Image (cartoon, rainbow, N blue to C red):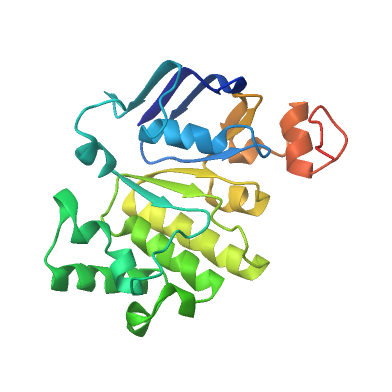
Length: 248
């Protein structure tokens, strides 16, 4: 479903991606791990066509991301943003139905609200939450609203950017379980970037470790604890000792 081949991207003198090659199969949940500043978010932006690689090829379902029909291309995606990225001036249901209220996927307002309420139910939120504003919600509830928005238009591909950042361990577990259930139900292709190893174990079918602008290790989640790659082992165990230099 998603293929990146020898992708390079620099910002000025800073080389971020240095020949990244990765394939994500249809219906697969791939989690990309790696330290801060290794290019995980840049990778997602390149797939979405928000950032243009200096070199290399990226295709989604065989279609180049540089396609001119951007609306149709982006309509295939849903995204849960790291910080929630909810619109403070809109009630929750309008946040969830944001895409359904405009553009090519525009629905009648009443229908869009009905879909939003149903998606809120799917992530464990009651209908009364629909009329609240983001500022009236806890961090965990905001994440759930963001997840409801990500799935509102029934996308084929969903990106999750650090889905458990800022949440306590219990709520992190709830969000991880919801993501796994929803991705499986929808049959969607999922790409997650995270530092949280509990999320990796809960969400991933496949794990790809990004280091120094390249995929250092790629394999099934069941192998991350036995793989011999020293970079992967250091990251998984959180050790200060190893080939990855800690920024002090």
